[in-house]
Amino acid sequence: MGARYRARVKRVLSILLFVAATFSPRPSAFAKSTVYVVSIREDITHNTLFLVRRALREAAGKKADALVLDMETNGGRVDATEEIIKLLEHAPMKTYTFVNPKAFSAGAYIAAATDKIFMAPGSVIGAATPLILAPGGGGVAELPKDIQEKMTSAMRALIRATAQEKGHNPDVFEAMVDRELGLTIEGVEVVAKGKLLTLTNKEAGQAYGLPPKPLLSAGTVKSLDELLATVSLTGAVVERVEPYGFEVAARWITALSPLLILVGLVAIYLEIKAPGLGAPAIVALICFGVYFAGFFVAGLAGWEEVALFVVGLGLVAVEVIFPGHLLSGVAGTLLIIGALVMAMIQRWPGGPVWPGWADLQGPLLRVTGGFVGSVVVTMILGHYLPKSSLFAKMELGASTSSAAGYTSAIGTAKSLLGATGIADTQLRPSGKGKFGDELVDVVTEGELIERGVSIKITQVQGARVVVTRV
Image 1 (cartoon, helix red, strand yellow):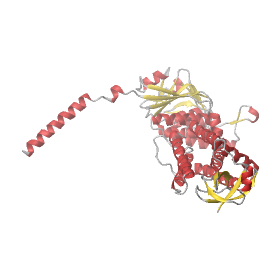
Image 2: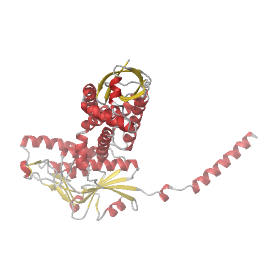
Image 3: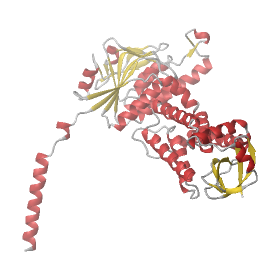
Image 4: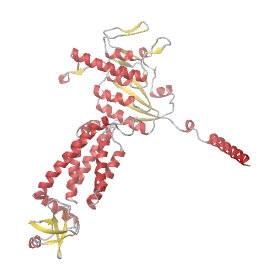
């Protein structure tokens, strides 16, 4: 009976599996591939780095099948180029370069970091020797011989390793960097020693060796659609990543991030000290809004960091409104610091979830600098601000607005000098104190006093009534 029962169960299961396999939708039939296209129509700068980084982040998030660099550039900055190469080497999807119509110098380096290089008719690639800008905007100038040799050696090593990693012929790219090498393949001289290698689309597609293999180009294509058809991505959904026009500002924002942190945290401190003012809260909102916007455009931050920051801010607010348990304040502070640090970290698409120490060092140093600076400034303000006439005016304005127009009569307050009472509201440091039947707008000298605690009026300076804990 048991054997017959097991046989029936197996038969039913096999029928169900057959039905499921027959009628379940096939991904290849219903799902379309996605391709991200980045147009590089400028010299390679940090703006280009931000653009490529953002494109890779978005493409990885959408699980795109490929990323294409539609390239027309005369070259550009070596430091930005090196960062772009690192990003492309860690890309979780296939990467292609479409030379349309030129990729000189830094453009050739970047092309070497993609899986395949395609070229438009009449396009050229090459001439990648390091140069410097002449002073006064006089174009480019040759480097001194010793520096040129040093930089050429470094770039040769970089481009050779990159080309090998992506399956390109490293000798081709080295000949683009170092004019002393030349290039000879299978006894055929492609370029003589003393000349830098620059290739047209036809020359780059020329086959050499046994079996014949194209020198560099995977093919000449007339358009992006033809390129996609060549790599079996016909009909793919194309997502174009365009510059925001905010990249230049984003570079300054990322550079000045410690200052934004400092000003934003000090503004939060002022808002807590004199609630109801509004102006410090607006300053803090602007500072941190600009901070996250800059790192978002730089391709580093996402909505996750913003959400983490908001949650941390909310926990700190809970501690301020309902003080005493400390846990929410500590947790909120850690979340705020974590969000600020994470917004700066370079994370490779498809790479490790947790960054290494090398990735954390720079962001931690900059955030810590801003945080420590804000602590110093708030300590100075905490000492001098409560005694200043400016704070008295701020406090009066805050208490007036928060109490629906209510203010204590100055004469009544003076008559209560030395009187004791209780804090009718939490004093942070401003609020209301009750002295017998009188409700008076009061302020501490900086300390926080909980509601219901005994207080004493120690000073009356115009409309400013100062109290201390009894």
